[in-house]
Length: 293
Image (cartoon, rainbow, N blue to C red; front, side):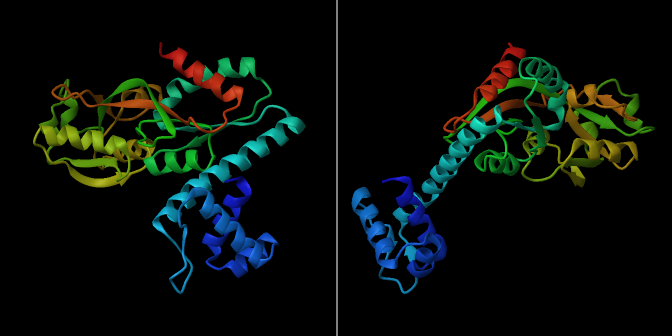
């Protein structure tokens, strides 16, 4: 089984006919059919269901199709990187970030750029689990700093720090007078929370559930910045990472700890451990780990 055979197989699966696939691959249909049969013989499995009127993959064929796509992406990426390195030198470093990570990322980037001053760095927001997985699997980023634990065999997910979550209270709200809040203080209040698919939402709602309190969700957001703006306008209360408000621009609302519930989240560094990672990527990962030792 080689890269050429996998490319043939993927093209046949995508086009659903040998005729179109052969045309795209610039080979004869009999040659393509023979190549697929040879692949089946080598793996010892039937990959295409030939009893159906339309070309369909068997269950085994579907598994090979998914894995073959990853292998081809990886092969293309490594080939591209090798050619690019020969012509242009060090590549770009692409990092996926959550909002609260900016309290430490600039410090690490300063150290990194002191060693690799010619490297161009791209910082991309990857907030939800879907965003992170897509960006890593499609090679849009080299690594991610995320609060999502990724249950995927080829993704290395390393915990780097834990941060508390705090409540933001609108100006003039009656809860401002309280030194600290209890979960039940938030019952009945208009609540602002991240939308479905965000781990912070789950962390917050789990804490409410353990305390027997059901939040009155009025707004669902993607970015903490949006939540802060809504709180400043008196539209509700939200819960955000402590590091976000500590290092954010001035916020016109009260910041309160919640003392009867340990509401926190873990932040991870994630990268594809099976993908070729250039030395500059591994160096950045080392700097992140060292920052929190």
